[in-house]
Length: 207
Image 1 (cartoon, rainbow, N blue to C red):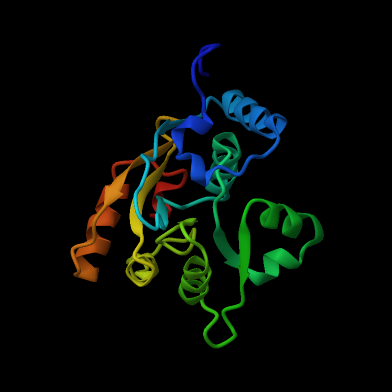
Image 2: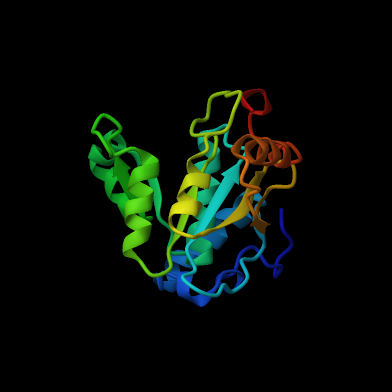
């Protein structure tokens, strides 16, 4: 458990333009929740220049608990983040409203041209500087190779890639650093996969 008075999470950890201006009570509840479980948000996202399209990739993603602490971090940071999920999740009355409130956009993969990567590119091209979060695994289940969608998105919208992590060993969400792709997708995906190996997942057997 964090000692009383220590920093759990602060909106100052992200650039002003990425803030959602939610009610302070929402930020307080998020900080309370993280403190209750002994979690915190480490690191920060530095100011960017230009269009400022930013893609945060977070991992290792192995459990629904990633989303629980991830949402708490988003609210605590007061971050205005866009993310994408199965359209079926958004049809549920309460869950659907919550996901949309958090910045979620439904993706119906059965329709041509409506895959996650295509939808992300379309949305980011409409905005002058946007922040999206995604998991390169694309699933909580064990997978042998990461998906390259985030690399395609970054190239299409001239965006930068930023590394984040779910670190259950140290009970923290980490906002770490930028990653510059090499141009070789296989090499980049291997590097990112190995990067996430340094963090303890909730379910290590799934990574």
